[in-house]
Length: 223
Image (cartoon, rainbow, N blue to C red; front, side, top):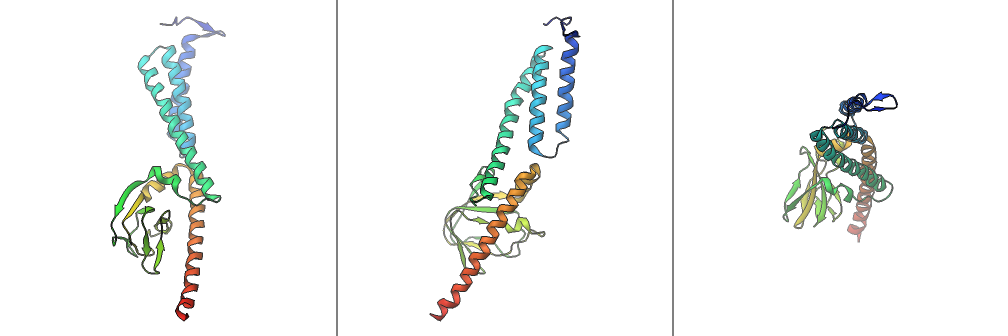
């Protein structure tokens, strides 16, 4: 037990310990009013560190143990969010791969002939083709491995499917719900900005590919 009558710079040690605990509590409460994840995690890490100091100096070993565990947990979640922002920013600047989204997706398998979704269906999920091939039924365009499927439903107000997609081979998919996308979007506006930029780029590429496909069909028919 530390002597409660110790004095540092003319201030009673007991007062310093209480101040550390009070500031830690204020920061902890403040973190619950933050709407974005990065500042929330930073605020919680600082609060946890202050509570660790409080638990050591008081001493209160349960407090020391609890907040000592929370520091690495919050630090890891902060690292995850910063890495996600970095990867989606990099993808939006040129690499249109969606590999950075895989940690937030679940794996699902489909058989040849399975209908992924139909035009007009209510959309709740987005897909990433890991292995296999799908086809957009209405325009007869194949979607190979590495393609994103169903992202437009996330962007439309009605969340409605704009085309029908079926599996032309046995296909392995990575799936993420729109609810999870919305959670990531609202947790960090930077992620939301670059995600929208990335999906817009992919949409423009899909439109260009479709235009080229339509241009080649009359030529093929004439030949």
